[in-house]
Length: 390
Image (cartoon, rainbow, N blue to C red; front, side, top):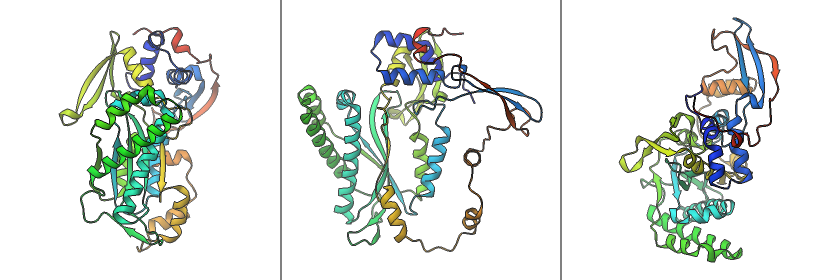
């Protein structure tokens, strides 16, 4: 359902102002243009009629951009479902690796390099601790987030880590039974800090750019780093559903935007300094958009990655060895005998919503009777004529 205020409204109103105050990259301009045009007549669409009551509905095409808050619902639902179906039946830990704000300038200097090093350092840390503490090759599903609740730049990686792995001789071994946490948090923080800063300095030195940001790197060495680890939960399903809320979300959802008025944007944000209480935050419209553009990822950048036993290749080989001694599940046997679901059927099963049903009579189905062509090119249109408030 359409919310009263959307990110597209913010772009239409303040996009031109942002372009006059800052230099937008071609990628940022293209992304903002797509979001502004999403599900509008600009992208074309189709006319639908209910075969039961005759209700007419005009549906416009989606932009499909991964930064758009209106285009990720189905992908998010499918990702959660796929990961639950392919997750090992063991306990899992939720570990979050954060980087201090002193390095934000380095991140903005070269985002692709910075985020790739972040992923590599996280996995190298987890992998080394798996071998040193339990003698196993473990794994993780890692998801990059770049934002804080107030849209500020705050790169961090969420990890789903199984409490199991396989030893050097290929035997399966469950780990993490004795303690509340999988690994000692302070040791994990120190090791991650050392690995990331060392790899960052090497990369910057190789590109002859270390002198430009060396003061920021030195400040990061003096800062205490924090790795957050939650206790083991009953099953992987709970962790995946929690993390799945954020995998296909970028910076903000339309539901969090409360108001757009007087050149200001008001949105709701959790205040973690006050027990995560939700509070309204108001920013200038151009500042709101500037912060949003900080989280537009480099083209083709992969922000969800699998390592170790959750790497697709290793997972396939492991599936041949790993068996669970359980009685046959009759529901699963029946499910395997049924014909495969279509994307529409799967979406309805996961969300309980069927977009093909008539919104008026509920029972009728909407049938496409006419295609609606694009009315104009959406490129940079939001920069030319910002919309005024109705």
